[in-house]
Image (cartoon, rainbow, N blue to C red; front, side, top):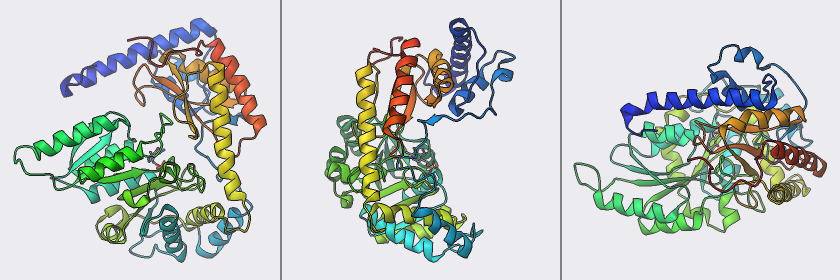
Length: 443
Ligand code: PMP
């Protein structure tokens, strides 16, 4: 499609209509049955279909017990836990369910303070600040860190919350090719040589923003290369660990631990509690001085209601468990199990001839479908066989690189994984999703 601002909207609209219509006919041709959708991503695709009567066929309210291959519940903490749950319930009875106040007013409890101390220690920084929502953490913190006269250099596949924060900051934003350290250097060098547009002054600050694990690619950031560049060009580095904290490294400390990079080399560490810790909210961890600055300058901290105390307690207890403070090695076993499950599943998918993205050790493994016309069929066939998949297509991915985003958990048993593999083996066979090349077939 056209990248010009004027041409973008109408052309994109045509593409969407074209593909959703075509998908509708394909599915009916192939399967000759109405579409019964269940996983959310699937429903969204269906509801955009312009063919009348389509909506009536989606069974959005249908409930069926399925093996969940789609949630980010990497360590299984989203379910009741013998260590975490009693503590969460205690906190709920002593502090209540919600604070109904911001941190600066009446929203701070000892649990919040303890959690921030624990998070800072866990990720290896001096101090931390917590927020009620992961998305909001990126979108309010980036504008508090940089503004007019600053430059953000962002990975091309960074999450929407980073894009929102970068756009709202007023800083100039440049994008480098996904995880491509050589291209990052080209962008840095060119940006420094050019300086601020029109006034030809140097940038006030340059902030490189990357993720620990990219949620649509399952790939880890090349941290060592990026840290070397940020030092060489005197830039700052912001790392979003939403998917890597509690999932990577022997102690679950994230991308730095997994890649042997010192947390001191990352200026701002961001993460969410909605994945490995089975709770809600997000954090920023950095030097004490920076956190102090954010306490006074980030409107999302000053004016937003604080994290619910039971949610904060859930995170605190999960981190304690990972650190072995419950007196057992259950936390360490969960981490080892996650890695073992992930590598087993990835290996078996590759052996089956599936095209899987991402790195070994990553619990996120996108199974490439490419053709958007297959999204609904793949999802529905798995659903019928008792496996819930999240399938992702345009506009979350480029048009021709649709995929099923599989997330593995330490809570999956070997039997679960084998059942899922059996279903995927059959379904990828039927939908001709095996033995696909690394690149889309159509162009
Ligand atoms: N950053 C990244 C990289 C994410 O993938 C997500 C959501 N999955 C977020 C931030 C937002 O986090 P939350 O869902 O906790 O709001």
